Length: 493
RNA sequence: GGGCCAUUAGCUCAGCUGGCAGAGCACCUGACUUUUAAUCAGGGUGUCCCAGGUUCGAAUCCUGGAUGGCUCACCA
Image (tube, rainbow, N blue to C red; front, side, top):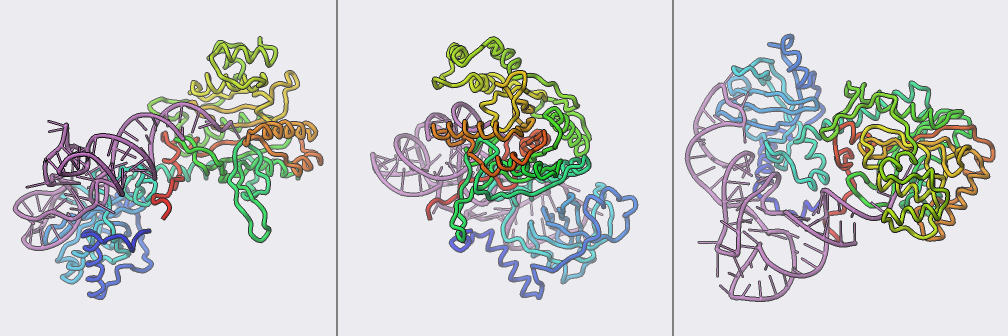
């Protein structure tokens, strides 16, 4: 960073002085491999068996209370923290003097006997200790911790040191994703990896990031979805596949949007979107059960029951419920447009029935859908990769799963008719030419794959970050992404 | 992109209608062998986000900018 320009203030200088003093006394402040045999939490949990026994622990000192010829400190490790007690008459003059050069934040390795203090706190009575790493910067204050959100995101390492709940969120995140993987593997799905850099970024309606390959001298796009490659694998006969991975979309940033985020997409040959509903509700319910031991989550003070089955409702029914406008009684584009105008929406002339229905859904319904629900019957215009309903070709066999007003799953019975797919792409190209740079691009190779024949299939995508927000009760996506996208601090230097 | 709000010590924050830059923790010096927000005595360590402007005088008022938060727009 700007280390060199940075004036070393008194706090930094004091630590560097101690660093030099340690070296002058022949102690290397940045130590070597160290083997601990216990975590702090293990010792506290198993005090009865460990009392009087010698343990070795390693961690960061987070507080020091010095009493002259003895001192207390707390040592924090991956699983918690534990008090240590060091006495002049236990460790000898030389070691005790070295302890004067310890700062809050330093990593040390400690060996000693387990005992309880008068007040009953499990403590390690230090027999020997060793420097593992000197900390040259002061940690945030002990009661208020680090609150400045900008600093928390920019220096997540500090946030993780001092804010226990933040550490827990990211441990939960990891467990949620590994549990998802275990479940999918158990259900017979094959985890695959498809390209992140692509010459055509398809599978979603979004703007991509662009980069350049020097040797090939071509534009490459970062993927906006994993969909089209995974469906190629269905053509190839892999039958049940999924990919958990990073998606990149060149869009605005908000509490529910980060330019890079993690999705899982799941595809199954010979299945349909109803199978995908079952996978969605079972996956999320099972994760809650296995990771948190519960059928319901508490999100922002509201209890949300995740137990399957979740209700299924059509978009037309939901729009009628929340807006009073009944699209089943609206026969054509023009009547739909009039209905929108009456509702006070400002729409471009010539929008089709389906897009207007979808606008109504977005405007009146999405944020009302607090309990888990599957919304079905999406219009064909906004679903270029989904199979049409035979009973009503204006709609598709697609659903989105909503919880707490957020879209967390999107799935359909996959369009496997290459001729229909080509027409849908051509429609999208029309939108693109009309200035919609988020419309889908033509992907000839994908059509080519479909022309070889893709079985009927169900496909499902889940936004993992939003799912984690729900499960960990966080209202900002930046609180479930370790290093969220931020503008650089100093501009143009 | 629009609106609103924030930015003061390492951290958490106070600083009124313009008049010498503050507190707690942390840190430094000293005392203290079961403390735990340890205690006691002493010490303020600062580009008041940046650049202009108004004024005898600006952390404070004005203009522009930066970063962040919320929100609207945007966003399957």
